[in-house]
Structures are given as C-alpha cells and as structure tokens.
Length: 352
Length: 228
Image (cartoon, rainbow over all chains, first blue to last red; front, top):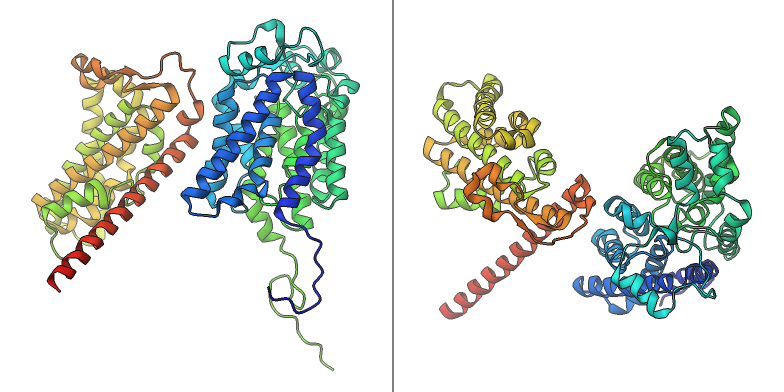
C-alpha cells in the first residue's frame, strides 16, 4: 500500500459500520423475540439465511469474491427486513422478500453501494402491495415466557404450515385502527384513546412489525449510532420535526380528524425509519443541506399518505419516493469544492 | 441501401432487431396489456395485422408520396387499418374487445408500426415489406405472449386464462391453472412487475447473444486452424 502524507484513519470500514448497525438493532430485536415468541425467531433466522444465500448466489454469478458476502451488508438487509415483517408471517414471505431485496433490489443495480433504492424498503413495499392480507395480519403480544405462547414446535407450525391465524390471536395496529375508525366516522380523538397508549408505544408492548414496536429502543439505537458516528443527526431530526410539526398543525385545526403528534411519532415504523432506514448512506443525499431536505421530504410524504392516503403506514413509500429524488437533490446541493465556486468555476485571484 | 435477404428480414424481426427486445419500442401497450398471456396474444395479433397491411400499402405507394407529407399519409393509412381491426374485434370478438378496450385504437400511435413503415416499407418493394411486417409482428407477438405468460403464471397462478374468448371454445383446453389455491402476487400484475419481467427477458436475450457470438467465434477459429 502507498502511504505518504500523514493520513489519519479511524479504522472505519464497511464491516465495522454494518455490524455496529446490527448491534444497535439487537435490543429491539430481542424485545421482538420476547414479545412475539418462536415464530418471530424463525422469521429472523429465515431472513438472515436467505439474505446470505442470495448474496452468495449473486456474487458467484457475477464472478466476484465470495468472501464479500461477509461484509455484513447482506446480513443487515435481511435483518432490517425481518424487523419490518409481521411477526407471525409465513416463511415464504421472509424468503421471497429477502431474495427480492438482495437479487433485484441490490445486485441487479451492481451490488453494494450501487443501488438507487433502499433494498429493504423495496421488499417492504413490494410485499405489502403483493400480499396485503399476510402483511397486515398482526399477532397479539404474547411474551415467550407466557404459558399460552406458542412453543418451539408450535412456532415452526405457525411459520411453515401457514395456517391462517384466528381472529383471537390477531388484531389491528394503532395506525390501522385509527384509519379504519375514521372511515366509519369515529373521530380520531376516540379511536386514538382506544388503542394508543404512550407507555406501550415507548416500551413496545403493542401489536406491530417484529422489531419496530418500541420507540424507546429505536431511539436508543439511533443515538448509539450517532454517538459512534455511523449516522449523522440531520436526516432523523428533519424527518421527526417535519412529522411533528405537520401533525401538530393539523391537530390544532381539527382534532377530531387529525391525530396528535405524539401518536404519529411513536406509532408504526417512524422511529425505525428515521434512524435505521432513511440514514442508509447509499440511497440518501451526501451533504448536509441535501440530507435536511431529504429528511423533510420523507416526513412530508409519510404524513400525507398516513393522513389522506389509503395505507395506514407510509415510511416505506416515503423512503422510496425520496430515494428516487436523491440524485436530483445531490445535483442541486453540491458542496463547494475548495478553490472553486458553487458552479465549479475556479475562484478569481484577487488583484493586488 | 442494400436489399436484405428474406432470411435476414426474418431473423431481424424475430430476434436480432425485435420490436421490443432490439428496438425497445411499443413499451406502453406492452406494459398495459400483458397481464395475461391471452391478452398479450390478442394485442400481438391485432398489431401484427395492422403492421402487415400498412407495410404493404406504404410500399405500394411509396413512389408517389413526397417526403414532406409522408408522416401524415402514413398515419392516415395506419389509422384506417386500426379502425378496421377495431370494428372487426368489436363485431366478432366482443369479450376480447372489452378486455383490450382502449389499447386497440392506441395501436395508431404505436411507434413500432410507424417505425417499420418509415424505416423499411418506404424504402423497399412490396414483397420484402410484407415479410418485414409479418416478421416484426410475430416478433412482437411472441414477446407479448412470453411476458404475459410470465406475469400471469407468477402473478395469478394461471396460464392462458380466457383464451377461448380469443380463439374460440375449441381452444378452451389451453386455459390452465398451474398453481391452484394461489393467492396471487399483485406486484407482477401491476406495471412494476412488467418492467421487472421485461428486464429479465432483455438480460436473457443478451446472455444468449453473447453465447451465440462466442460459439460462432470458436467455430471460425477452428476453421481457420484447419485451413492453416
């Protein structure tokens, strides 16, 4: 290796970044395992395994080094997909979804760092559009230590035999419940009070995707990543502030129609999306102004779809939408290069 | 322009310069109607008929059209043909007409047809022009059927559903349900699925072309060795 000038290197690498993000996801994942039991563990294992299988397949087809599969990016993609799935979903949801993300979402674009869209969110949206029933069947919270929780064998049955879950075991998420209530002209003041409690949303003891339910653990993971300088605060803060501001504004106009900000911030995938999805370095803008606009855009689209669209949750759609705008944002918010003006022309030398 | 042999015209239309796989034209009707193989087949045959007849007519009158007015004349001829096909389908294949609906009149604006008329029929005699229309039309049709089949198979688990609307009741036997109790994959029926499947087919064509090329080079190489 050629090393001349005194370069400082902080030993950052793809591997270190990926495994630190996995580490930040660990508490929320363990909570998901605890709340939803063996079926959730099965799904997580399936996602990671099929992500590795897809990665190895694509690397060998493309004639690349197979050891590149160990860089952690495939594991992280599989992990994030597992976090977004309904915890008692059938096995094929995890396998087809993860293969879709790795093969079509990542490697067809050229592999790590080349993809236009966030692979995990492509999968999330693709699965939601393709299999609306399976993707919105939310298991009740039934901690693994409970006597009524499914054991290991029962868990395998739930994941692999894919019998439809009975209504007694499932229910609506907070976002879904409030949305349905509004169409039945029940004001959101009533429906939010019925299903949403700040404590449950913070600790995660509520129905939802496998690893997204606890806003507090998401926040903790996010702050850990900011502390480790894996992500910067611009995108999450812009996103959260935008959603909070819009929710507060509309809530103050008509509280019966528009739910309060705390409900929007702590429900669904918002915290997860803000800290773990939107901050993906490949698919987000590369400088501060661009990142602020990108975060605001995600917040805006999310709030718009949640409030006036037909889907209860919208982080996936919003992230993909802003992913598509990222190249143009990068183009208009280029940083100035030292010695050149914003347009790339050299600065004029001052006359003496 | 050197005249192509009939074999070259066929090879161009069916594979090398295929409307979709080579020229990347006519993607709008391609995405819109290929949700089932039968719809693709119906659209393909309608386009084939229009292509054949307009190529023939244009090559017959190409001597008397001045370059300045050629595009309006071509479009008028194509529009007349499409109107005939439209009325024919409405009269004799009404169910299929209702499925394909808006996309039949839109064949007029199908850039592939104007493209063949402009780049081939206006420069060639009647015989080659008709063969070109036929080859291009069949090339378009098989891609439509393949794409429709892929999307139908994985999107709704059937193949050639409602084919009897198109081909008559004697062909009802080709309507197949491949995966019974299949819930369906809506993504493949929606436009993104069309683009993903088309991308895979295009990749398949390029891989095949590369292998053919390699084999041709290998044969030439061995021939040269023998002669040397």
